[in-house]
Image (cartoon, rainbow, N blue to C red; front, side, top):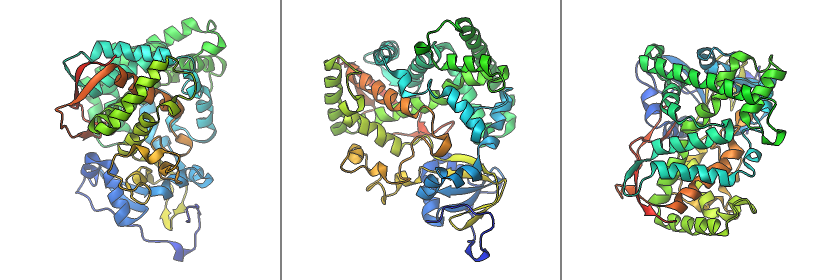
Length: 459
């Protein structure tokens, strides 16, 4: 398979890149907005691993499939693609100089090194019981018995309490709606560019932005007050960021503190809330899976030692349900980059400066890699089958240098949160035969009207 990048290929090796037909002016926007994962799968099947399209008058080239997923991890992938252009609008909106997602090469490594520990699995060690306590607190507040609960919203509050306490030291629940509004506008207008710039003049956005900046200023004051007073083994992400600001202000200047400190909410609020909501749906929708999961979580909490041994090995069915949900309902449907130079991918010429969609989730829905891909099968990830281990087949956290920094922490946070939820509550879909509706903005996930009914407490 030729995924190597060449700047001056033999002329006869170049293929004519197909163009996806679209609507006048808006191009492929309706299809992408309706179901981006299926759109890219259908295009891959029809046109192959490289095709062109337009969105709101802007041209894009798309590379897709395992070819694209594997290419991102190569030296050529790192050399030929960059992230800056897609995030520079967000950076300017914050008045910052740079953010982790918008940097590449050494600059990206500098920021990643600062934040690596705070987003890692190691940062959760010794805090599993605290996480369970935070989850239980959210359950008791937002999941009343006998009531119908709007799942995505309830998960947003739960996730904010978890991330806030574990990663930033506080749980700013009063800012959730402001954070979500700002995320919605920024991602749609400045990052994915699916909406016009004029929307940033909306008073609702301006109010939300002011509130998020208010939160950021408060976080700066709080972390500055504790600077130098926290033992090394008790430092969390905000301490690492502020320490980097004090020691290396050229790397973490004052102008970048608000975007860096509020970053966990921007990065995690929708992504984690959407994923946990989808897991709740898939497990409740499949009674045989639910029965296996309940048996495991009951045994887990009966043992009374959450950190005794490998957590995931003690809940294999729930772990499989989490992984299968992320396959069927991926958050990272496609990554966005700009070509840093002319190069050839799979025989197609891509030019310097072109905007590129990288549809790494396409293999999730291909029977060549996941037989019966529309079937929810939690045993795909067992040692015997390991379908996800095929090269380039499974990319729930993205691919390449920009693979989600919180991946290892999420691999603990997601199943632990769901274990607690299933252990504590007796839940059913509301209505019982509900079929999940999804949304795509600002990130793909269950629709806001997805609800479950709390029948009672199990424990």
